[in-house]
Length: 237
Ligand code: ADP
Ligand code: MG
Image (cartoon, rainbow, N blue to C red; front, top):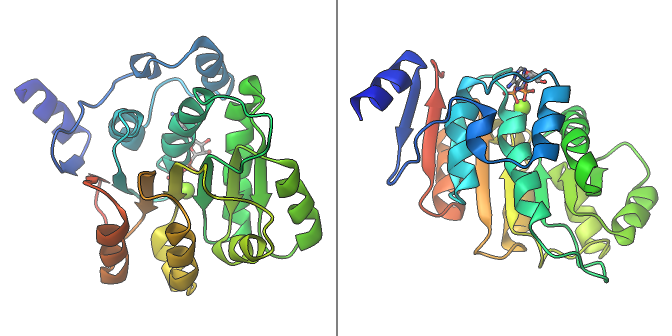
């Protein structure tokens, strides 16, 4: 136990919550199948970043998480890798029943970056990833969602529009990520986020990532996460 405590101190990780899984030291500790390990190696990721060391075992255990770490710390893979793991276990359905993984991000640039990362890890499993955001044809996105996908990466406003158009169903969604939650709030997306969360089953796994935790984000986290573990890496303003 003191060994784990010393290790976490050296990594500047702070955690709160009960039954926190131990941090991992290598991707091999995650129990990922060989195709996913190969995809990680192909990306040139030799070992997990600090936030990944603590977030991966938490998310893989099915727990909700609040992850606070600065930009560039590797948060995307911390939610994308467990998302692939979560989805590849699910049975394939003949009929399209909607996405299993739903990721919300504040801007189209961020949504696109997450899309690219998700595509790389989803490829060996033939999982379909759709990215939906403003500035491009809503009709094309409607058609893409109608054709079916396992993962959707979206800005909140466009996702709401497409939900209203019944482009997708949410009842199969069990893995929800709110990335850069503070920026989504700054951009005024709180109502859209609340509406999206309200359309996803309450027994989902919910992940919230943010660079900062202002009061409004804290309040939302308290409302929509279940027994979350909070992980903070480094100095956070
Ligand atoms: P954040 O979301 O915390 O801002 P990103 O997920 O965008 O950070 O990652 C920042 C950069 O680090 C990206 O270029 C990403 O490819 C790279 N990266 C992520 N995880 C690893 C890793 N384990 N090893 C090496 N590079 C990584
Ligand atoms: Mg990020």
